[in-house]
Image 1: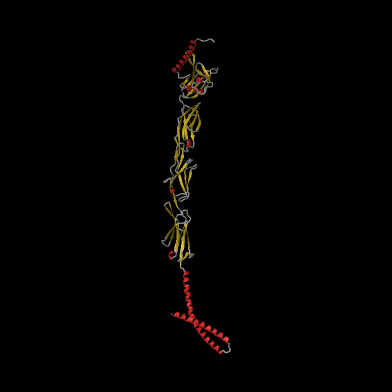
Image 2: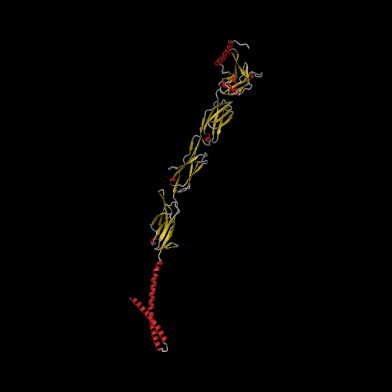
Length: 531
C-alpha cells in the first residue's frame, strides 16, 4: 500500500474538521426552524410540527436536506425528533407526505429508535432506499411544543373518614390519549387508568387512614412519563360523644365489683377508650376492636367514689383523633350491713315463751344476745328498748354481744331490738333494726305459794288441836270411870287366880299412867293458848 505524504494526510483531516466546524456554524446561525441534525419543514409546518428532514453533505462546503421514508415510522421515532427539537413529546407520527412532499434525496427508511435517544442521527436505520419510498411517503411529526406536565386536583384536601374522594389528573387539552397513574409518594398504593381524553378521575371509596398522605399523578405518553407535583390528602374523623353506663345502677356496696361501659357510634374501629375519674387519679385505657369497652373495678372502696367520663381515641397515619368527653356518671359506695339477730336466754330458768312473747319471772335474771354475719367484725351493737329511752351499746366480739339483766323488774318489760354499727374510713354505717322481742315480767306465783303453804298448814294444825282437846278430856273421864269399875270388879271376883289378878292390875296401871300423861299435855296446851 502506497503511503500518503504527511501533509497530504493532515490536509484530509483538516478538511473534515473544517467541514464539521462549518456545518456546526451553519446549524447555529441558520434561519431555518430546525435544530441539531434534523429539522421540521413543509406545508403548514410550525416550530414543533412538520416534515422530518435530515441534513447531509453534498460536496465541500455544500450541504442539503433530505427526507425520511415512512417505512416503520412510529411514535418512538417521532419522540426522538421532538426531543431533539425541544418541542415536548410526540403527539403524532405521520406519513404519506402529510406536510407535503420534499425535494432532494430520501436519506433514510425503516428508522428504528427506542425513544430515549438524544438525536435521530444515532437511531438505527436503513440507507438503502426501496423504489417504493418516494417523496409521497415522506415522514412527519406533531410535537406538543411543551411538556405535558400533569396536574392533580382534589375537591377538598381534607376529607372525613368513610367518605368517597375523587382525585383528577389532567394535562393540556392538546394532549389526547395516554395513561394516567395515581400514586402515593410513600406506600404501595398505585392506580393506573388509560384515557382517550386529556384527563382521568380516580375514585377512592370509603377512605380511611391508609389513604392519608401525599399523592402524585403521572402521565405516560409513548415511553415517557411526566409527573405532577405532590398534593396531600388529609383524612380526618369526627367522633360523636361516647355513651357511658354503670352496673350495678345506683349506690353500690363496699367491696363489690363495678362495671363501667363506654360505647361510641362510629365505623372507625380499632381505637382505644379512656375512662377517667374527674376528681381523682383513676385513669384506664383499653383498646377495642368493637365500638365499646367495659372497665371492671373490683373491690370498690370510698377512693373509687366520684364522677367518671369516657373518651374514644383513634390514631391516624400521623395524628390522633379524639371524641368529645362523654357525660359523667356517678359511682357512690355504701356499706350495707346485714340485719343482726337477737336471742333471749335465762340462766336461772325463769323464761317461758308465751303467745305474746318471752315471759320472765320477776326477780330472775335474763340475757339478750345480738349477733351478725358481717365482714366488718370491729363494729358495735346497740340494744334498743322501744318502751323507754334506754339504749345500751357494747363492742362486737366475734360478731356478737350480750346484754345481761341480773334481776328482772317490771320496768324491764317491753320490746327489745338490735342495731349493728361500723365505722369505715371515718364514715359510720348502721344496719336496720332486728324484729323486736317482747319481754313480759310476770308475778312469781311459785314463791308466793311456797311461803303461804306453811302458814296454812299451821292454822290447820291449831284448829285440829282445838277440836281434839275437849274430846280427849271426855275420853279421859270415861277411861277413869272404866278403870275404877274394873278395879272394883277385880276385887269382887274371888275366883280369879293370883297370877291373873296380878297381870290385870299391871295392865290397868299402865293404861292409867298413859291416860294421865295425855291429860296433862292437853291441859298445858290449853293453858298456853289462853296466854
